[in-house]
Amino acid sequence: MGDKISQDEKDKIKAAINDLREKIKKEDVEGIKAATETLMKASHKMAEELTKTHKRRGLQGRTSRTRSGTTRRTRSGPAARRNIR
Image (cartoon, rainbow, N blue to C red; front, side, top):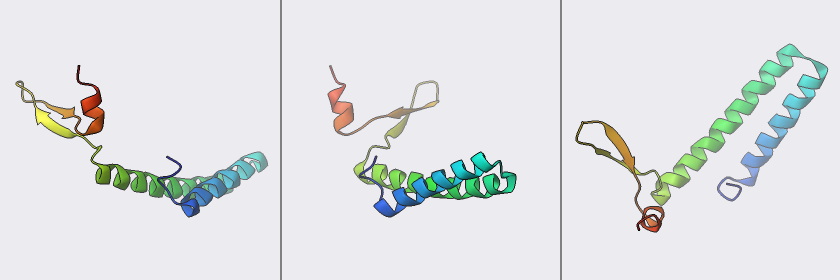
């Protein structure tokens, strides 16, 4: 995961974690709320970047219908070929 997000994003997340830890130590309730919000925003950005990376690489998988009409995920690409016996 470390090579899939920018150093800037990593630094933002680390700073948000450290800030939250400090607020917790001080028992600053309003500070904890604000720091938690900042951390959530930073982690959402990271999740978006990881999702984009997976989509570009085709690792999201596809869905197919079963006989009962339910949807199931199927894998494609190199990961799926390795599981064939």
